Length: 59
Image 1 (cartoon, one colour):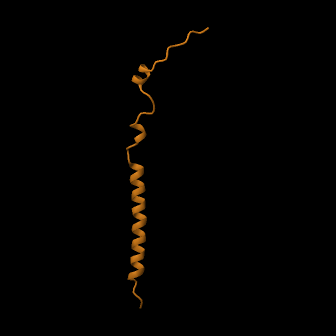
Image 2 (spheres, rainbow, N blue to C red; image 1 turned 90 degrees about the horizontal axis):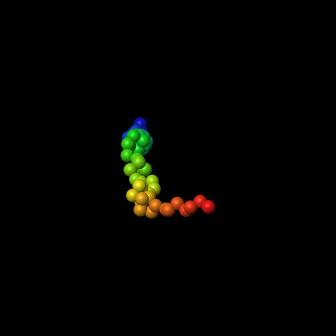
Image 3 (cartoon, rainbow, N blue to C red; image 1 turned 135 degrees about the vertical axis):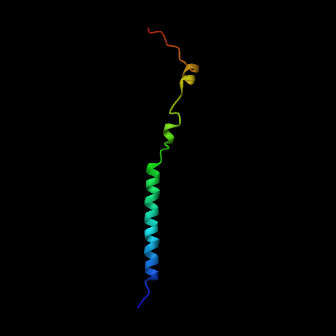
């Protein structure tokens, strides 16, 4: 009777790879850090105050 050890070992490796992949995906989805919320998306109020453009007279 042939041994099932090699087949069982391959099955366990495959199952481990799948479960590790799912765990990594879930960890990424549940990660609360969103860098776009922490970085400025344009010039701030100090820049606007320093570079204020004088309004041209309408005419």
